[in-house]
Every structure is written in structure tokens, then in C-alpha cells.
Length: 248
Image (cartoon, rainbow, N blue to C red; front, side):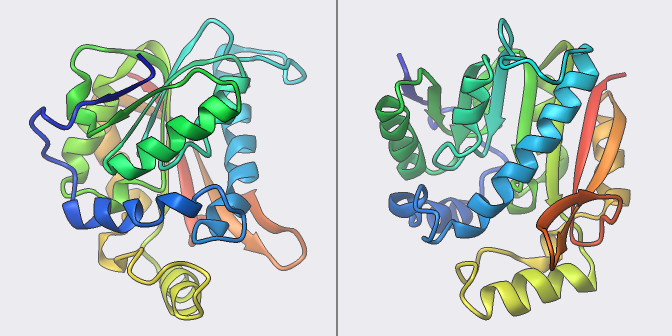
């Protein structure tokens, strides 16, 4: 079954207001000029970092077309599937969950149009039970949950032995407040109310949560903005950053 609900399981990390906010954007999530336009601009950079970490973790040839063939992937907080479809095209058997059922419905419909089989589920990380995945991703999600420590524990619990976890999130800095809220939301480039700056996690806060969940951080990298190139991967983590981890 390609679409399911796990919403009847005990949920401790979903914020209903956040789910409603993102669910309201479901209809135009795939429109590169719509409310999720910023995610469309971020996606190629996010995929570039993921591909780099996948190749490094499994010792793969960076020129291969399907580096995730034979592997399972879980995307947590998948929205309408912007990351899931590329992961499926890279060869993964993809499972994806989101707190907003509206997003899951749009994601499932889009995957059918694309001819892709993705196991979409509405609900939270707590509903996965004993399932384990080779690759677990959760990009720009942890800043929207009610309990970051429990959320990270859930991500760690979903990671198979020998697997790879990649998380990204905005840093709580003056730059992120200016760029994402004052300018981004203030000028309408990002829907108002998308971010709560006080819920952003610094690397010094997120990394101990990951390590406390029994994982070892193997890479941290910044996602910054260049006037000449747009969004780029860099060593500057003041705006947004990635953390890659494996089982300790």
C-alpha cells in the first residue's frame, strides 16, 4: 500500500499548529514559484550534500546513477515529496512521513504522476515502530517539533546498523533572524509564520542531542547564500547547517 496513516499512534513531537501551517501550503508545494519556492531553490544544494555524504559513507563512485540501489531511505517531515522523489530516482526504496495529511495526499498524487513508488504515511516519527532504514533524512524539520530530543531519539531509532542520518536546520543567529524572518517572511518570500526563531537550534545544542541518542557525528557543513551563486554548501554555518551521523 503506497499511502497510509500512522496518526492513531501516540505522538509526542508533532505540533498541530505547525502541521496545519504546512498543510495549508500543500496544493502549491510543487509550484517552483509558489509558497514553497524557497525549498525549490534549496533542493539542488541539499541533494548535492546528500549525494556527497552517501558516496563517502558507502564508498561509492560519485559518477554512479543509482547510489541507493538496494537500500532503504526514510524522509521525516517530507512535505509534498520534494526530496523523496529524487531519492527514489537514486535507487532507494523510500518511505516518507509528514504530520500534515494534506501534504501526504499531494505527495502521493505527484509520485503517481511521476511513475514512482513511494510509501507515504501521515503521522510522526513515533509511529514507525521497529522499522529501520539505511538512510534517514530530516531536512528543515526539527525546528518545528515540540520536543527536539525525543524527535532525534526517534530518528536514531529508525536508523539501521551501518546506516547514515542527515539532518539540516537553521542556526539560531542574528543572520538567520534577519534572512529568514525579517527579510524572508517580511517580504513574502517565505509564508509568514513559517519560522519561530526561538526554536532554532545551534550546532552546540543539536549535536549533543544526536550524540545522546547513540550516534556519532561524522560531518557538519553550512548552507549559506552567495550573491553570485545563490545557496551553496560552505563552512559557514551561521544561516543554516547540515549534520551527518552514524551509529556510534
